[in-house]
Length: 313
Image (tube, rainbow, N blue to C red; front, side, top):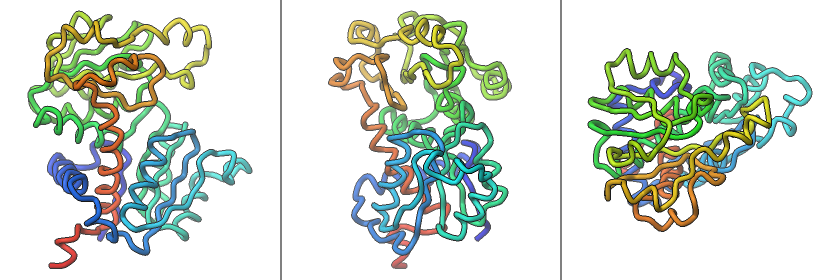
């Protein structure tokens, strides 16, 4: 089998994404059946940037498959603190592990790693660029909640400029038919022109940039909330001025469809009030759970491993 990586959300075809989501759904239905698929395999988690959900969900995914995990959770605890390059790190890790997940603050670092790796590399988030495994998680949750990935109206709210989860999700959804995008952000955090043009305009999808979620709430099938990311700002004053621009509460949800699904890649700060958590439209904790199932399916795919039925056949 030729070596494959997941660096960009479009690295997999639409059919491959559908097959992977089907596998994730099957895992969710009975995780125990997959408990030994990765016996003897090792996942390296190379996290040069802090993470809770992504790193732990990768680790949980591999452990659930019967594999083992090694790695580091911050750059200061790796040889990067001594000046080692990404190229050299991945060459060494290729000697120790069968697959790796890399998060890095510099855009393109996982792509560089993939060029030098002898094992599959998964981009677990690179700067404000891409986050393809979060996108797969989002797609799984959207499909669960709406029954489809096409003919949807989605509002993306908050930090659309630096939000790598937003960029990846837009690129992936834009391959589907009849997607309507409402881009909800302050002027300073607008979606970058290149993302809007390449993913939305060039594919002929409807979009509209708005300043408040209230003006589009009744039309939405999906509301994708994001936090304003302090770590992406050069100026603390700008962060403080913008961080509370959007706060979703029950009052704002009164105008929403009963079948709306509210997603958030987490962590949240205060952009969704705790009272929303008990609303049936809140899907973000299910979304976090789905991240484990999607990453289990992805690890299997990149390692060329099959589910229990295929192994027994």
